[in-house]
Amino acid sequence: MDTFLAILGDEIGDAYEGQRLQSVYHEPVHHELEANLGMVDPVATSIELSIAGRDFLITQSPGLLHSKQKHGTTGAAVWRTSVKVAEWLASPKNVFFTHGIIDGDSNVLELGAGTSGIIASTLAPSVGHVVATDQQHMLKLLRANLDENAKGPLAKGKSHERRKVLKDTQRTPVVTTLALDWEEDDVTKHLGSHGLGSGVDLVLACDCIYNYALIAPFVQTCADVCGLRSSSIEIATNDRPPTVCLIAQQLRQSDVFEQWLEMFLRSFRVWRIPDDMYSEGLREGKGFALHIGVLR
Image (cartoon, rainbow, N blue to C red; front, side, top):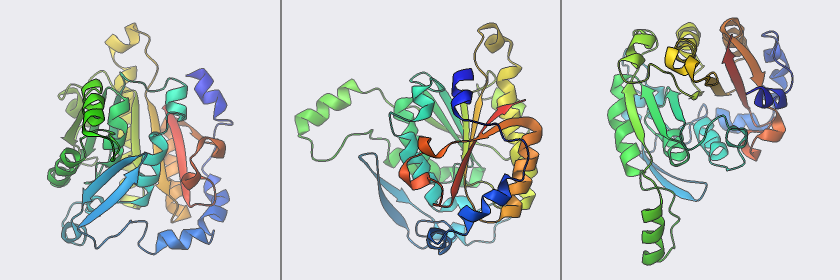
């Protein structure tokens, strides 16, 4: 863990990084993202994507996206941040794998997974178990998309025999879904009652910070998830490293970003992932920022 944190460079000391990132926010390329607020296509009922040699068919719900439900509906669409992060995580050269933060036995939990399942589907073949969480009304379509894209990383164009050999030698990715409401649930008890009382190796969230009202419950949920490992007698006895928290976001409003970062810094030590560790689509000037947090 120390080696991993060292390569990230200087730890962030205050929330004013948001002012520096304003230059990223105003890059011309960002206007392309703003066209649909960062959604790939908000009106399509299905979207085809190719990520790391795998073809994905994602069903969306424009009706749910534009409904006036009391609960959040933004997860009903595919967001560019999730696509870019999925491409980055799919690389065997990704810093999380090369520095042993996660491996084939790791447990990963995604917050605000939405309905696409892109992150979980992409990451699952490379780790032990992915838990994709969101509010209850998102889970039906999330499960459907996970099932649709659970065929594993078999590239098209292979012969039938070659595909069968690949299929037989690959383990089945393990992805489960779990309802989790940041504002309503007692996160520690809820996750503990679903077999996650010993914590996870990585908790991640993509484009979940866009609303002032959600910042406090979101940060508290991140802290509660990471706190499971530090408070677990079983894990402490085995000297397991702390949970790493990855927050990826498209930069929209600097004041929202600064408020999130200020609150996040109260509970976490924080680093911004350096540009040379990103895939091309996430580098500075593209309108995205990825941060690492380790519970204080």
